Structures are given as C-alpha cells and as structure tokens.
Image 1 (cartoon, protein in one colour):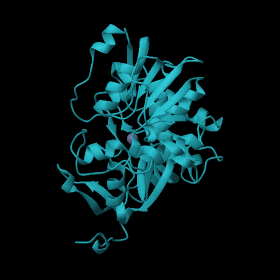
Image 2 (spheres, rainbow, N blue to C red):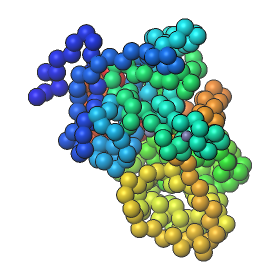
Image 3 (cartoon, rainbow, N blue to C red):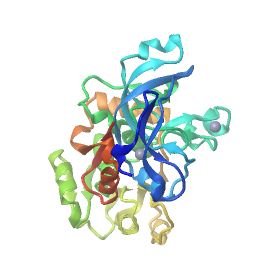
Image 4 (cartoon, protein in one colour):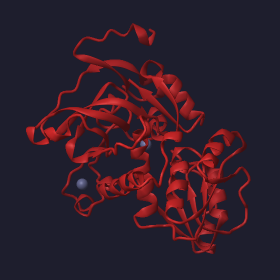
Amino acid sequence: MSDTAIAVSEFEMLAVVKSGLGPENVGLKAVPLPVALPGTALVRVEATGICGTDIHIAHDEYACEPPVVMGHEILGTVVEVGDDADAHWIDTRVACETYYSTCETCGYCRSGSRNLCPARRSLGSFENGGFASFVLMPVLNLHALPDSLGPLDGVLAEPLACVTHCLMDPPVVNAGDTVLVTGPGAMGQLAAQVARAQGGNVLLAGLDRDSARLSIAESLGIRTTTNPPAAEGFDVVIECSGSAPGAAGALRAAKRGGRYVQVGIFGKDVALPVDQILYKELVVSSGFASTPVSWRRAMLLIEQGLVQLGPLVTRQVPIGDWQQAFDAAQAGEGIKTVVVP
Ligand SMILES: [Zn+2]
Ligand SMILES: [Zn+2]
C-alpha cells in the first residue's frame, strides 16, 4: 500500500510509527489526534529532526515501547494547554526536553539527573513523538525559543542540549585546550561549536566521503581534516562518530593525562584499544541525553549567538517521504535531515 492511500479522519493525523520489532515495522499510519491533558501542551509540529537514535530505534538497537510515534528533536508551536494556568504558552514556539515523564522520587531525579531515571519515558521511544502533525508535551519541559532563531534552527535545540550535557556539566574543555572532534554529523558539528565557545582550539575530523559535511563546518570557521594525526597530542578528544575506527583514533590521539568524551552511540559492542586509557591516564566522561541544566546552557549559547544551527539543517522532507529521510540519515548524507508534517 502506498503512503498516500492511508485514509485519515478528522480525528486523526499521519505519523511515523514503530509498531513492532524490526525495521519493517516502521511506517506511516493514521493515529488519533492527541488532546491536551492537565500539565501538558498540545504542540503543532513545524519540523522534527532525524537522529541517529531514530535509526537505532528502527533497528531495535535502542529501547522503545511500540506502538509509538517516533521523533524527539521537535520544533513546534503551542496551540492548546490542559490547564488555564499554562495559557501563557499558547502561540509560543518551543522545543522540549525529551523525557515525557520521570519518577521525580528516585535519587537521580532528586539530584537533577532526570536523564538517568530508570523510569524515564521519553518522547519518540516510549511516548508518542514528533514525526506527526501534533505532539503532547509536558509543560514543565518546554523551552521557549528565541525570536532570533531561523525557521528550522530549533530542531537542533535538543541535540545541542545533549552536547552541552556531555561537554559543559562538568566542563571538559579549558580555554586554550587543543580539541579533536571525530565524526562530522550533527553531534560532531555541535560539539565542535560548543568546544570552540569554551575556548578550545578545535579540529573536526571526518572521512573522505564526509567532504560536504566538513565544508559546512569550514564555512562556520571550524578547522577540519580527513587525515587526523594518529599520534597523541590533543588535550581533549570528543568522539561523535559512534564508530569503532573513530573511537580508536580518538583514544590514540588523546595526549597523556588528556580527556576522552564519548558522545556518539555505537548501538552494539565494539572492540577498542582500551589500554590507551590506562597507559595515558585518560579521564573518560560522557553524557546521556539531556538535563534541565544542559537545556539552560544550550538556550544561552543560542541566545548569545555562540552556536550557529541553521546551516546544519541540510534537508527537509515531507512526512510522506519519511523513508527517504531515514535512508539519508543512515547513509550519513548531509548533517540534519528534518521531517515536516
Ligand atoms: Zn536525538
Ligand atoms: Zn526518577
């Protein structure tokens, strides 16, 4: 059945749904329009970015609870709220923290690490997400976007908040540090910009086939290479490729006493030269998803013009062509492909 053959009633909308295990169970479906409940906002989706995590979810390499509407890098406008007290949000352009609900009582929640809550239910994996015309979001987790942002820049607020969580909480780059970022996808591009904002002297590394992505980074003033130094020499290495060769290269490029930061997701077990950590006394850190604090940092970087998001949105596709968008993301074409409902 072709996607255009799907009948949608006035109480429904088209959405990209993961309806069961296996990539063959990802597809366009008519689903009920959500209704605002107390504490939530009904958001009209303007665009939702495709993330590596979406590809992992499609291939059962990342936890989810089907059937669920996919997509968590959501840009939209609030059209309805479930409670009069939240009415000031109506007509506000927003992005949203990815968790729909957390327990708020565990040690992680109570200490501000809601991203680590074992009961976390996130948009696009456990609760309906943004590859659709409308999505329900908890008001608590909304972030108003600055007026200065370009039309689609806001889809990168969520990935930026993940990067600021990895790089700024605690800060991993000191002013003057030499920094190698491996992998010129969206996370690598954002990591390079955030590391630069922290005063790092940044080099972004990719493969020969990444030339288009690297030239976008160059146009934003980031130095790039397809041939990163194999020997130790960087104060900080930030691994954003989620590939074994990228991570191995990053471990080898870190200098003694340096810092290794894992940002990319592999989605499977990989073989790595872990002895590099011991021989060089590397400090290893990472960050999973985002926190309220990392969102605040991300929004400040945006407001202060320290990161440029617009040039990273390299393609938009209508929701009916969602498969093309997934294929482009999987093939590493462009930097950020967004789906528009
Ligand atoms: Zn993501
Ligand atoms: Zn919790």
